[in-house]
Length: 296
Image (cartoon, rainbow, N blue to C red; front, top):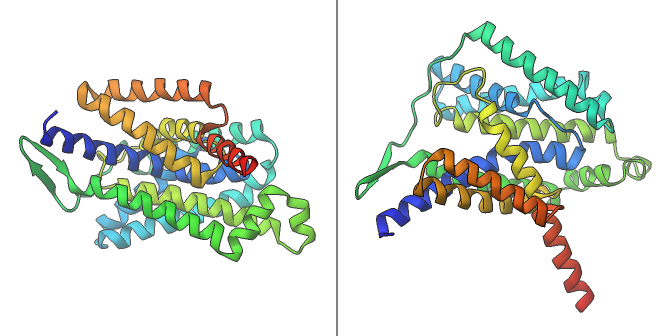
């Protein structure tokens, strides 16, 4: 492998890492912290992508249109949580059925309102050329957006009063309530954050994917659920590790063969990791930490 080929694999890894992390992080917050399996996660991403694209077509600058996409998805998530999801906490199977139904409704409603596709927003920044290869600079920069998102979540949930109250609510709702925490508001806020992250993913990928269609969100769903399972219950630990591991596998096999082979290799690697690490990467990290404490 020469220098150009190595650089190409590196760019493919950064793109795969960004895609997996951004697709996963909103789902990981809602599932890992709230125990809700949101099968409509892809459609939350769809809302962000459509709101961004339609706003850009109305003449808004792309960054402003992306902000509109995030806000629209956040509002949509809050309305959904207040009307439906709040009744499903602690009811895992019921939440799966309800969110699957919401997914079907949103896909068909999008098709009715906007047709089978809408015009894509142009991808900014152009491409990088090196040797006989070229790569979209915007797709490479998405890795930076993924890292910034993880850093923001870390600061939010570990360095703020809100984060302390949110984690207390998730770990022991009754005790948190007895100490004066408005647990109902915490659940709503946490779900809103997960929705906003899904909307951010849709907004960021609206210019990077083909023309948005009603099935736009389904492109992200499999990778998101695979990464959540491989990463384990900890959003801040498991998500970047799963994104790095699965992204490296997918990038290498995609470069050597095709995108399809890369996806298959990623899924096989995920199956092997689930067999070897039932609690995911975050479970492995926690066991290593426990061993260190015991050895001191």
